Length: 311
Image (cartoon, rainbow, N blue to C red):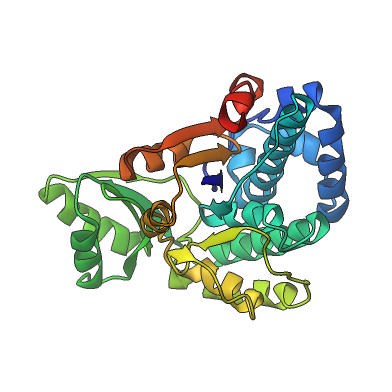
């Protein structure tokens, strides 16, 4: 059983996907669709931005989504040209990556996924600018202990990304993150502040969730053609009756990625392929599951693995 995984925010880097576009010109259609809907030249955003510009939420979210879809499209073409069926049984994404998963599962159209990400990025950028927030990765300490420390803090902070048994991301007010970071250091944990604009996946993003919902409820959602695993539930999603509410909730809910991976393996998943910039998710799979095959496809070099993966 093969799962397609899609990268989240923070994985971006300048010129990501450029070599694939040059080798597979048909993927230019994805840039054209994205540019039309976002009202910006997405080739310029992806290829010509400085690291600081690209890291801005308003740029990073659509650029990573677009690059993930480009990598996926190139893999489909490469395997097809080799006479190999491109088969996958389920999809999952990390935070932002869920939007590429929505598209590849058949739940939303290409046009609609860029409408969704435009609304999401703008709403989250606005919320981050109006309310100060911070995030940090906490490593080498049990996730349950992290939740316990956050719950007992005087200032608001919460465990928001349950990434692996040994890595959890926290988010909250700057005071809250600083308060618990000192506690974690005393417990011999490693704490790495993240260069982000806001406290994503925490209650500080509620204004963004409310604003995003107004766009999401105008979008047509279909049932997926493969298994769809959700950050919100931490397992396979089976109720698709109110996707606008679920996606709005996703903005303020923890990313239960460890639970998702365990659920996938329990369902029989033994091959995981990450599409998009970086290989963060491939690393999380490696640290969470045993006896599985792990790949990432982000450029022409890694695309060379496609025939090995699907052959």
